[in-house]
Amino acid sequence: MSNELLYKRTNFYEVADEAEINAAYDYCEGYKTYLDECKTEREAVKYSIKLAEEKGYKPYSFGMPMKAGDKFYYNNRGRNLYLFRIGSEDINNGIRIVASHIDSPRLDFKQVPIYEEGGFCFAKTHYYGGVRKYQWVAMPLALHGTVAKKDGTTVDIKIGDEAGDPVFYINDLLPHLAKEQSAKPLGQAIPAESLNILLGSRPLNDTEESNKIKMNILTILNEKYGIVEEDFLSADIFVVPAANASDVGFDRSLISAYGHDDRVCAYPSLTALFESDASEHTLMVVLADKEEIGSEGNTGMQCALFTDIMGAITEAMGGNLYTVKANSKCLSSDVNACFDPNFASVYESMNAAKINCGITMSKYTGSGGKGGTNDAPAEYIAWIRKIYEENGVIWQTAELGKTDQGGGGTVAKYIAKHNIETVDLGVGVISMHAPYEVVAKADVYTAHKAFLAFNIA
Ligand code: MN
Ligand code: MN
Image (tube, rainbow, N blue to C red; front, side):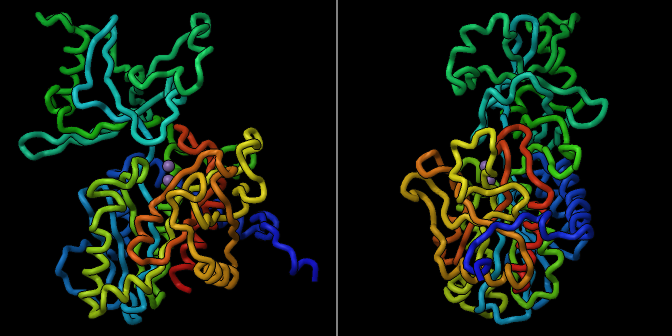
């Protein structure tokens, strides 16, 4: 009886048998490939479309007819992707939505980036999202991006990740001369304007120009990509860590990679959708852009495209949009802070995500007195508890940290405001927003299980 009275978090390894542990590890091989293929939102859209097309998803444009069983994707400007599958039940019963984001904190090239100084050529950057600047210096970096030329063509740049590629670099100060820097607060030690990318040092000698090193880099860029300096005015060039995903630890139970936030939710949302063909519900997966800077713009979750697509589905299936929204359910799938014993003081242990204890639900996010959160209602959480119990999903609840320690938000509130039941559910991450973050394979696998149960329940 006492066991029934008490709530206890479940550790995956306490209940999973050898076959399920192997299934979790195997599942994460696909996830690691996804991480390596998708270091930017553009790459995530392209690769996710490839996976979806293999599962029979077809491109959708507004006005197309739909019928039960149809599987569509809508590519929004190459940076935001909607996937949806029409169910057999009445559309007025609502849509089951899993929404995650595919942008991650990084450094972006400025519009006029390239300069020469002190015998080197550098590129100026502007950081994107919640970057801790001191983490980005003195490590191998890669460049990923797209240059849009005046003639309407685009050139993709991806260099630094493959064996044999050169990498890029941000200089840091040697400890011998860092007395002043070391005394500064962490957030001020590396100013944003010192996050300059080392591009080269070799001068081009047969030029009249004074900037011989820069001229040499521009010559190489022109030969390799057919671009000139002015083309950077219309370019999205992102600086991301060069290394790919790796297992961590002798037991290989963890994965380190760039961009777990939030591909660790995006990938399971896709795999769960692809396994949900038998569901009677209409299902939607949103891979949003711009979450790290407030879900702004026409590829972010605040864009009206979200309700436009819901409206298009409703219209094609003969429903009423007000009814569909009122009856829809959403998992805002984004990462949470995993309890880290090295920094135990910022967590409130009873309400912190624990490693290997499954996907984490956050009833509320925000900061201070729940500022800026949709605070999911108890009734919706009770429904999720029931379906997870019925489907054997290992899950836990958590807040981001101690009350008043800080805070954060997700896309949840931008979905909930459309009169859609929404709660946050995602994987706990160690060193969130660092160039290399860590997650547990068991937790990634439970994310897949959790989204699958949501889709079919
Ligand atoms: Mn996130
Ligand atoms: Mn984030």
